[in-house]
Image (cartoon, chains in turn red, green):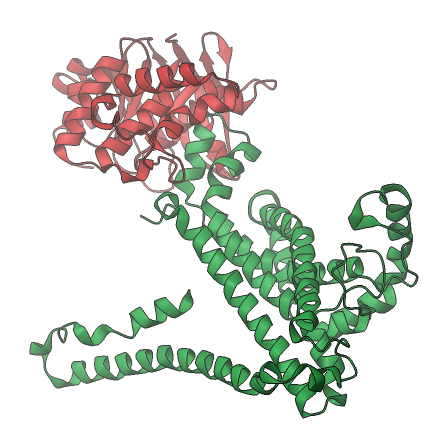
Length: 259
Length: 331
């Protein structure tokens, strides 16, 4: 299920403006890769190019290749809709569909792929996905209540359940805990540690302790000044990045000297 | 109902005066504003009550008149039954409005979605502007356009419908020529309410939170699936409100109906036949100039019926919206 991602010479543009320049990296299957860096360095933009969500913004486009399991996501015949069905995404702010119940939220993505799912299969999938997101015990008695009735942390885990219900190959997380309290954050981090047994996870975070806690590999992005594109400064094992980074900029950033 | 909301606004006196420690100046401005707001709220209630009171008072002579006196009025049926007179008018009014709504709302949702989620921005701006412009055309112009230009064009269509689908009671033939029939009225009313329904729906669709749209897209929704998962559920109550605005306009529309429809007082489903239907508003405008005092009172009684219909429709709409309030995304 989990897939390796090869990014080669990727540039991202918003119209004429080059937001991210010249990124190459390898993301191993069944691992957690953290993207860190100061605001505006392009890490979120880069994350969105991994499932073509950046195309939601008019004028956004890329040059370069992103290979998932050997297939270039940006090949002419690849449909962005198909890409997003294989590469799930969790956003900064929890966004369950407010008009759907908890159970319907979990099934939302499945219903897109395969409208005819039997009632018992659906119930099983709701349970397994919610269990996978460590939410089952808290919501099993109110599956038909609106998703927006949950707390923020629960909503975020509901969004994770919704993303894994379609059994994606890769899970992208864009600062998934930055809008949550410390206890909910801890719950999400524990969940990430479990999910990496099955999925390839890429997470953007502003919280360096979080990156150090959850990730196997860390990529540091930086931008020299406004108007310049963001660049990948270095990528290495998380332990190496946080102890003996090879670049001065990385050391300055993680030791809190800027950003 | 809007009345309840207004009452709620009229009760802030119970709250302790906010931040009175700050001294007189601020507090007075707050108090003035509070009285202004409360006064506006009370005013709308007073106007509503005044209209209802006027209708009841003026309709009373007809409501309490004997059958003989009513039968003496030329355009009231010979049995002198006021209910027998109002009934077909209510039927015709509701029929015209529902027909207009059925024709207009799907088109309006389509246009609104096109403007909010499909059209390139520049085209969307132009289209939105044009829709607003359509809403400003007076109804007498729509009546002229419908009667003189549109009706002859529709004659062939109605003829085809009655020839081929005449077995459905709605399309029972022969289709009248010229087509001064309920179906034509429905089409013209639909065009009239299209702009308001479109404009309100578009505003609601545009307010769909980006978070929800992205949630759908990230699950691998196509644009249409994204609209179905995120935009339409979010806009549902807004579209219902928009439809009710349109329905209100269609229920009360006078000139366009008066100029197009060949009137008649029956409970007929035959939309393509002339002399079968009439609406309350058009009937009042038609009969008022010739009516004696009791006749005016009878007409006002039909107006009272229209008032009640409108109230019921609005209450029904509120109920539909509130039934799933927990799922609306407002919490």
